[in-house]
Length: 281
Ligand code: 13P
Image (cartoon, rainbow, N blue to C red):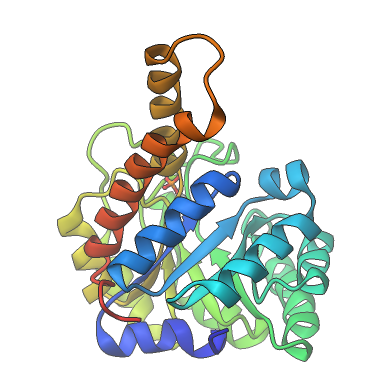
């Protein structure tokens, strides 16, 4: 297993980002790992709370432990977007080496207090914690915010990092989860301001749909981890559907999944290259 604390710091020093891929089950998890091995890349694999609820934290942790130990490249299992402290504690107890405590919907003071409690618990057990500031669209908590209201405040970032002890920070700079409506408008000036103000690795959520040139600009601007989810599960589901339509009745699971896995691998490899993460293992 890799020293998780140094993973994103090293990426920042070397000028790439670690892609964090959301998996839904063992099939896409396996495809993601194979793609990383073929690209010789360092990656993170992320379970979101829905996946945790579907399989249970123990099974996710066991799958993650197996891939972290057995993959031929460094892989770090991560709990993505936990909105609850309890889920973070359960994941840490089960063996997750990295968790995200997303308390960004709360006022700054409350966000700090919640993240700080998780950091306290996590650091004693050698686990790293990602926090979030700014409003990343697409989680159903957008309210009436528009334009600059979505952007993270650099001064708040400084306060949160200092007072919470978070190891990395996800920031809202115009990014959104899911497919973008129109071209994503990332605010690189705001990214620069945040990067100048804080010294922890910065995380960009909502990778799906961001053009490669903007991904590269974001990395240059200080982003060290990029989350990619929607394109993984859509590639999975759309190709699964196509395979099922193509095959006769009563197909065998492994026959269906073989070409589907290859499609997922292609997408994952593309993201690894966009993140300049090939041959970093
Ligand atoms: P996308 O689903 O937009 O790629 O975002 C994933 C993400 O940010 C998970 O935290």
